[in-house]
Length: 339
Ligand SMILES: NC(=O)c1ccc[n+]([C@@H]2O[C@H](COP(=O)([O-])OP(=O)(O)OC[C@H]3O[C@@H](n4cnc5c(N)ncnc54)[C@H](O)[C@@H]3O)[C@@H](O)[C@H]2O)c1
Figure 1 (cartoon, rainbow, N blue to C red):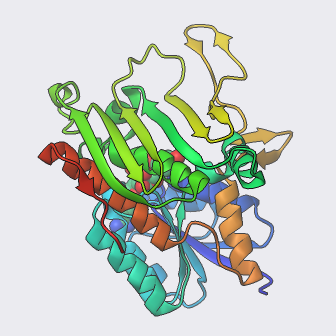
Figure 2 (cartoon, rainbow, N blue to C red; figure 1 turned 120 degrees about the vertical axis):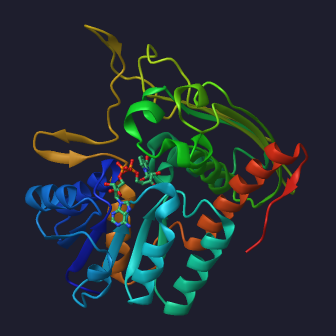
């Protein structure tokens, strides 16, 4: 048991901010350092959240005071930072996906084991209330054996066009599939064996973004299957930035989930469905399921126990999505690589 945890955050963009907000709220976490290759961003984060700013993550690796590090760099830039932190003896919470290549994901999982440190992936839908409720139902037995699932997670064009400067080096398969692929593997407690997929390109490419517009994939497990679909080209007139729908079929039950269903709608200059309960301040207190995995990571380290979402599950997630990509390229089913 530790009294307090000294942490740092590498990557202080959109989602690094979620980690900073979560750590600031935690009574037993001290934010020591914030790092971003963009020194102005790092300085702004330090001014708002505290800690010392730096532009080189090696400074964090070299700081013996720091116990744990959140890594929230772009999807394809996790590996070097994570390896440096593990090698320096830090526990790491990395944003999804663990990596966009299985080689890198394997290297990180092996490095965590070799260092004897925890490497956990922020698969935050395991804390999303309807998803967590579905898990409890499945655990309780009434759902029976998993038969099939379908899951869609998609964004409006605003995400690749305005939100992510690096959209052309990722894609909806890396930005969105990690969430729903992990969700189904976790809910069904199954490992995938094979993927068959098809992808659409052209709309984003015509806007100068080299990414898939949409992907549909069939993922097979030993005794059940799931279809996953994603797109980044929903017109911006859609009132929510995210379209998220899930149906689970078991031998005993059908469970339908709308994990970001609108609980409020606003008709003003434009019609909108603001998301509530994901990240929200209520009378001065920060609440929201998107903070829960970050608090869980800190609480687990403080209690001296392993956090959920270990690197091995992060590897499997990357391996499934790589098989989906390869199946699109080859036009054939592709086996999911094992660790
Ligand atoms: N869990 C979620 O729902 C969710 C939502 C958004 C993003 N994310 C994930 O978070 C990660 C970051 O995404 P984002 O939207 O915050 O991107 P972003 O572009 O807003 O921020 C990334 C930051 O990392 C910095 N950076 C890049 N290389 C660096 C390095 N070597 N050292 C230090 N800083 C570096 C960039 O300068 C930038 O400020 C991605 O993996 C993304 O998939 C998760």
